[in-house]
Length: 399
Image (cartoon, rainbow, N blue to C red; front, side, top):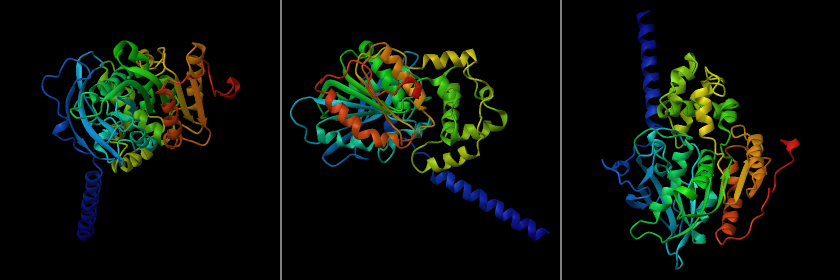
């Protein structure tokens, strides 16, 4: 009997060591001292704090920089943000057009910044062709990813400002590219949400930037509907991350109040891990064990949640032309929600083109639509005219 207990104890110990090893190997990267901001931040948004050469994922014929810069946080105070700038190594004479890129959900922990990965443009490989076209790609990490502090996940104003201030800072790199005022903004999922906010904020917040177009891919728009209808493994992860992030951002929210008791521990653990790098496999395993319905409250009916969801839904007017791309099989950003968003903007007279790929889902759409987005941007930089009305949207009866 004693021998059996010893064997069982040894097996348990080995399992614990194995689990610990998996967690260690798949942990998120530790940001270097580069990401630590000074004690006192410059007050001017878009100020470049520091830059350094950056090579991860930079295509042949291009050069890159990692940047740390200031933006304006959701409370109006200066906040430090990191990002990446990639431009042609031997650019043609003159100022270079800017493709501002807003990434999709990578996690809400500090180590989940795309600039800490092997390829910050992994979601949309087509953007790697931008330097060969003479463009400069400016990709923000958003606050709280790379830099310290809570990540304002799906806090639209904070994310939108970070996108615009990254462009300002990129133009101040010593020995870096000369940037044109002409900017096209694109982004995926969370980044599509940030793209729409950046485009609507730009005229007042960054009037010196000339936003020639905005191309959100599978953008998170009607947050109440998307959160209320989230399903599948991806939906569970994003719900856990949204509730965890907002409970750290907004004082009126409590994670424990919002999540069912039996799901709290695992949901919190999943929310603290990244969706990029080796760690994503552990996140996926955790999501598979989570119950389908995590929430203990109806966030669409709770007045506190309803107010914040409405506040962070991008409903402001956008003067620049829009290209909205969407996967027909997307179970996270639902096609009917994107169609409704496009119809609403069309009714206001905005210039919107909608392209839906019937075979694409949430993960495959960015790569499949990337070439279309790059070609569309190429037509926007010189200011070619776009249709003044809705293009490409199926009839209302279809969705």
